[in-house]
Image 1 (cartoon, helix red, strand yellow):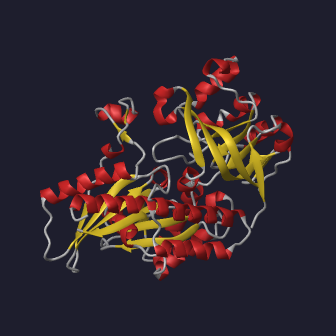
Image 2 (cartoon, rainbow over the protein chains, first blue to last red; image 1 turned 90 degrees about the vertical axis):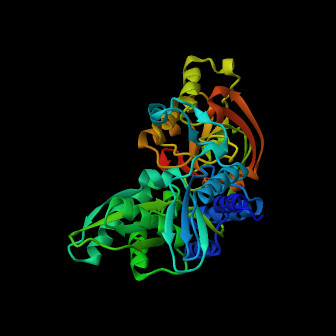
Length: 281
Length: 171
């Protein structure tokens, strides 16, 4: 398995089928916190599901998600048009192998909007979103594949916050947005992904980076505070009530504008997300 | 560990009448699958008395709100308009358990109770469900692809009773 196409394909299958160790540990901690409850039963089911999915290298969820790509480029590596084509071919191959749910809508602009052009039955026909490319000091060419489901996309919010020169104001506004989003999502416990930047584009890019790099065992004070405040809502797993509405928060704060506004991108990732895996190309 | 109540389809009236909110059940046997696209069509057949024309017998049945795709099965939100509006007419036509996820309206909870039917929530555990699913067949409306009306055979699908006897787990 040396070709870039095969590496990317296997990376996508891993992203769609496998919990990382820190993710499993987060579930074990949450389950231990509220034994015998409905929420505990749900979280144990989600964890059992992950073990079966990993063993079979099959989908964690029937909404297998839209592939999103995050490419880190070290000082001695190059990104060419050919490389990007090979990455896209790997995504196509991986979608067929997982298998991804057929979700490519066919037709012209209007037909794709009202879904009148039909559905392509080929799992591999699903185009990935535009790639985020970031230069890094580490001398690697590393691709992270993220599979983003529809439920969190419905409940995600990207909007400004007037910070009033206070981090607490920013946190409170995030929490105020996150609590109804988590409650409406249904497939909780969530992981909150947050990006804070100077524009909608930058904030969303930072949110994607937070999803690509976040770790359940390494939480900043900012992340811990958001998690704790949202968990006070007692939404619980699948909205059945309980201490764990949110397992963790993955936040990335970027450069900020010299003004009173911060742009916050927030995504309540579902109980399987961030579904991600990385591979060195 | 919560006690698990073993259930086999088709369900009789007495078994359903004993279920209460918060019970964890394990479902085995044949169940139907349908969601937004096909349920309004099944409701139309039920209200017009033409279910036999599409080879559907709903007596004592379970309807799982899911597509059946190569990726497997998993619950969609049952509070979507096309799905939640099917609860009452399909319960009247014999469905005993609606299986999905999400909070439903108090009117729907009441309608379920009036027809001795329940709503159960199943976590979106596709890999686990795939290992517990054997037969899959399209019953009607194959042109809807993965959203056709399916019948599948399942073993030990675990779910939690979310609405029964006029009460809801979300209250």
